[in-house]
Image 1 (cartoon, each protein chain N blue to C red):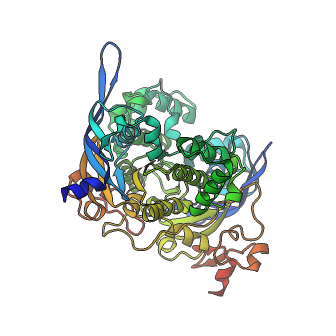
Image 2: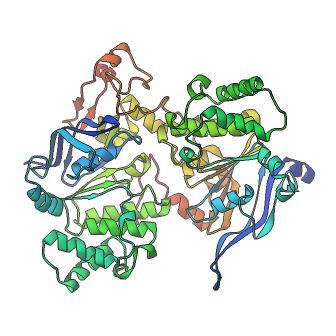
Image 3: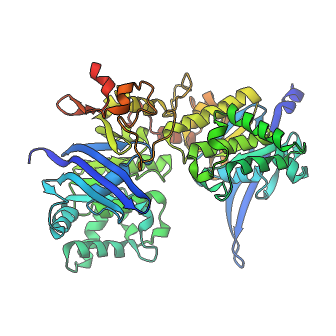
Length: 329
Length: 269
């Protein structure tokens, strides 16, 4: 294996139930190198969290893996023994922090009890108490928490602290990859800044190597990501470096998304009216044929209604864009 | 000069204080708002910004007469809001909230929501006339009546529902709209539509809006004046270009420094 820590190839994951089939993730390819922070942006309902759940290796009941490959540090997680997946991947190499996970702390247990449980489950034997609490205390300090947090109950902590505790617990064993889903969406701007700084500190301290950071808020992705992938309707429409995505978006959807962001400007109010993307995100049960963005796209032509756009690669595959009209450039 | 100003002021909050008391034997008090004083002029959008727990929504609830202030007065058109008949007051002051999905009764069609709004008016229109007003109002805010009327709430998107709630307050003909985080559950790509709608209504109909948000970017885009709150107290208020360009209070400076910006990265010290 050279380079890529996470490699996703033509991944498909659908929800199946009485409601029909929802094409949550429909042919996604993505690579993440060691040492990189990758952002995943998009509207709600575009499949961001579904992708994270598939990468986590334990998708929720109705979500089914339907094809493609996910390689984490060389392990093809859907084609190996579940026990190997658990011990080698989930307990060593990858950690997944789902959305709103800070609300999942058991309210009648102290934080240290929770940590003891996790460590016991992970190592398979009863750990020595003092040792674990010492390492855990030191670890939480890297996230800017006092070690006295260990003796508290979740309700005694603020939202930002709980979120950091959850991240602390999931990074106890120095995973190479951290998949983190909307960690700041329930936090205030000040705790959000703090949170993002803690994550960067963790990476600096060598606790985690790389991160897949999912958020709908491009301004906050901007603050920590090296690269960014934009998702629309179960597919990735554009990837590139964070700077390129913001300053030089190529796909019409990315352009619309960037121009609809209301950003604070200390120089004064922005000139001109904000633009929104007309229409609504399509229902993933019934995605539009051809290019999935064509009903909302300002440049749509006849070809877009029938032909699914191919992914155009540039800059040695570091920049990808899936739009037919960009072929001319 | 003074008199002219007084005529222009639509809503005035004077030393508004709310202390929540909890507990039966040992009273436990929490300050929700303390000495909040500000006013809203006609045709003006005022934003109330602050972190969660800063008392923004407490102020909104007091203005909407949902809770009683512990002390202080709220004047609407120069008269205490408690002196208005409650129906008359709600004809003038309406609100839209954070979650449009829970604001509708799922069993009824959208038509009914808008039709019932006429109940607050005293003009007893015929049903044809009501329908006509409803349709023209929907058109004026950029909704196609054919796409909306006759549907149930679950068939509409969050952005459409929030617009219908705005339409409802327009049908009633209210003068002041309290918008409590109206865009936080709506996607960024459609959010701009709601913000632009509020701006248009201000320009065209002279609607006054109290916009409550924690999103500094939206507050800057929309408002004429800003009121910054912290722990129930106002720390700074003034025109948007003053407060957000040259903040005076250390808390405002702090808050503005933590806002993630699209074109700039934070520097960590």
